[in-house]
Length: 143
Image 1 (tube, rainbow, N blue to C red):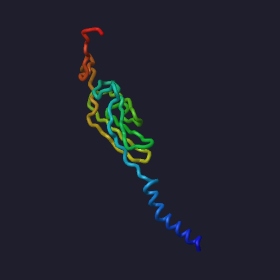
Image 2 (image 1 turned 180 degrees about the vertical axis):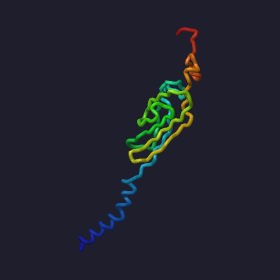
Image 3 (image 1 turned 45 degrees about the horizontal axis):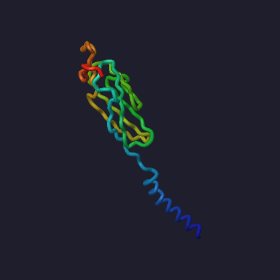
Image 4 (image 1 turned 45 degrees about the vertical axis):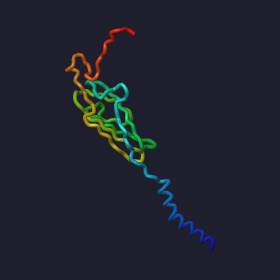
């Protein structure tokens, strides 16, 4: 009788306590990742000329373990990229949208879209190929 009672007690505990423990500790659901921001890496600008490259960097929080990226570059080459720090070339004048999606290995995901983020200037309109957001400064003195 003692064996039967202990087996019943184990069965009751396994049906009531075990699912509770698993749901609160072991099977914790992963939250969606958060994209803090993406931007050109140091030395790159969002104002470029036709044929220029631009490398992007993304900051993500709320992710543990491996995660995937899907970048979409309107007007860029390549137009899609699936790694963290893409180097993209823009061949045509215009203003373009850039977006990135981060997906965790558990399937949670989020998007960040920046409309009209990249401005590409035509080299044919500027014979000196001078970017209007940068100017060269000539030094009067030698150092």
